Length: 89
Image 1 (cartoon, rainbow, N blue to C red):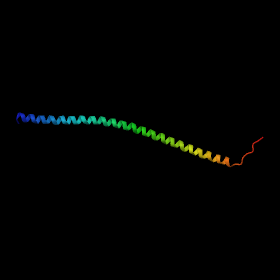
Image 2: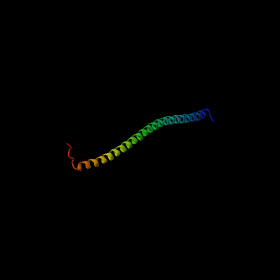
Image 3: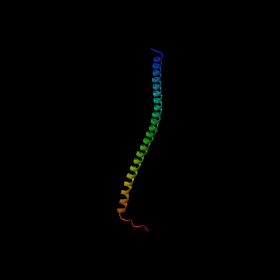
Image 4: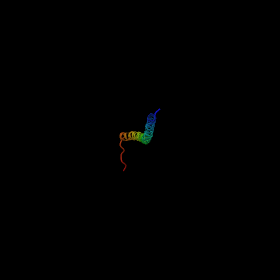
């Protein structure tokens, strides 16, 4: 193998090694970006779950209030339909 051919093989090997090193460093960069995105998604998921729980709690409160209003409505109708009382005195 001549000296120039040896240099060519060595240069090619070094080139492949550099491309591989750049590719691996790019993967590390993407890993950092994915980690950041996953962190933001986790925070958003937590916020959405909290909002869903708040909405469920508000819905249950509204249902209880509606039930109470239905009970009161029945009593109001009963009082309105009863004969008028004569005032004393």
